[in-house]
Image (cartoon, rainbow, N blue to C red; front, side):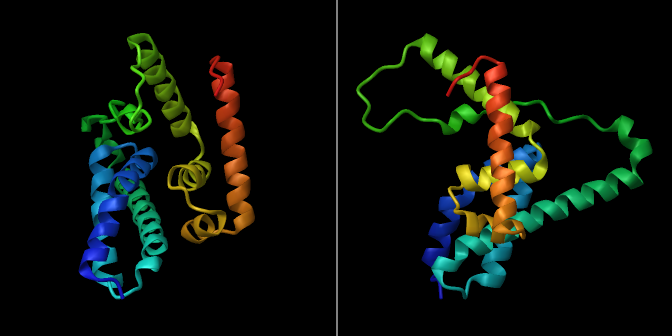
Length: 188
């Protein structure tokens, strides 16, 4: 059974990555924040009695389910209020900055030039754009495997699919990203 401190430490350790992953999915910062907070509340309310080693998988599954619920609600809302859509403002202004999450190596003695910093920022924006263009399941598998650093089995359990499907989604995502970035002249 996780103690209150262990649960708090776990939630603190995953909040930023969960938020960024959710922003990639829903493309709205406010909605992503709501989804992550709702997921954290559900974990604390319903699964605080679980051992600490089970919390990551439970949280990933809850987060995935909350995200799917959000998409279902959006689909319903869009179907019901499609005539009112002219009055809504698009909040997809693209100011989510992946650069915030990229830091230089700890204790680095090198100072990055402005040119290098600008080039790095441009490359990161291109990568972010291409990740957002991936199909939803590929994006989800890619982010869980390479952003969340989950293994294939954990990703499959969180996504509710087979390990083979996770591998296929990741392979296709990597191939698509590689092709798109190469077309833009970016070699990683």
